[in-house]
Length: 218
Image (cartoon, rainbow, N blue to C red; front, side, top):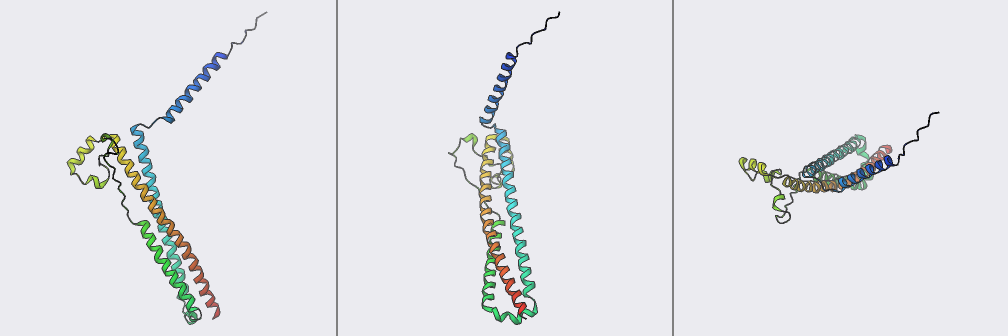
């Protein structure tokens, strides 16, 4: 009769597995809580700037889309208002129609001004006091064009030879802050633009209804 072998205890294996999992958790927590390395910070700042540029480009596209809608509204009003058989009936609602056209024109001018405010180039270049950060981390002025042109070609090349990663990161952080200010200014103008566009759509609808009503009176 063959004796059955008793199973080996698994307590030691389970203990080692729990210790390994605990070490992995601790390592992950340490990685999440640590500060970034210089090159990691450089990549993160570049990613943030790419996002800001995308937001600026999106705001420009939305402003152009609003201008397309304005053009379509103006075209509809022109086509309806240019019908020759309506001119003989305009005297019936002349005061109200004139007031509506004046209001429509004022809103249209406001929309164009806000579109210009969204699309116009802006300049935000914050100046960091030299006492704000240590000298070895102070921006070297090798990225922003206004700083670059302060040197000649040889000086610019020499600045790139001597620049530190910490200085690049500081300059990227300043540029990111400048882009964030541009994004905020564009979005504020964009909000005013679309508010005016809603009002202009309501006025255009009212004017079209008046013109159609006048056409039915003939």
